[in-house]
Length: 210
Image 1: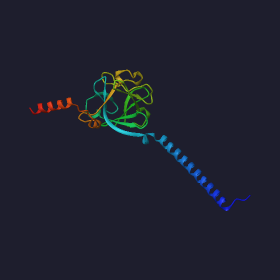
Image 2: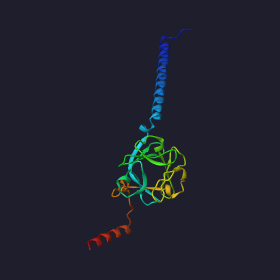
Image 3: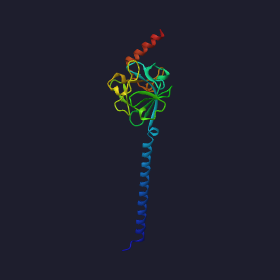
Image 4: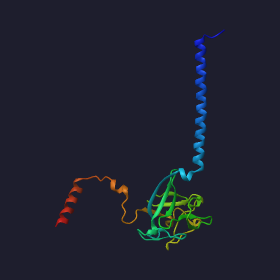
């Protein structure tokens, strides 16, 4: 039984459309695999989220973490040039790299748990994971050596990672803006104005005039 010419043309066109759709899906699948491979091979270049500058206040010493070069301690003054830290945050998770703005050395932890400063921070030894604690402090655990934390004793000297736990005060830090610098978020915080706050403001302005 032969098909009418119009029916035959319709079937041919239908098969051509299916053929091109199949080719396009295979191409997009290949492109997607290429995209995933590139993201996997270059996580450092493509997963970088943001760069921030702040200080790390040590709960133990009452001072700030400072990177002098190869040597690192927690005896930095508020606003000190070696206490200014450039913190590179990656997109996935809370993985960060910490570099001294002045010394341009990264905080790293070697296989012995020793804290050292290195000019190249691309290795996994220089990556830390932020852990936010209930007391509003932050702990930094090594991404490579699980359970080993960045910590400093009362004299500001680094502790070996193998001798640290999350509960120790030596590994508790607080992020602080450099002295004289205001957190940009603070400028946009809204305050509820009540009759009491208006009255307090009037009294304060009157006292300044007097």
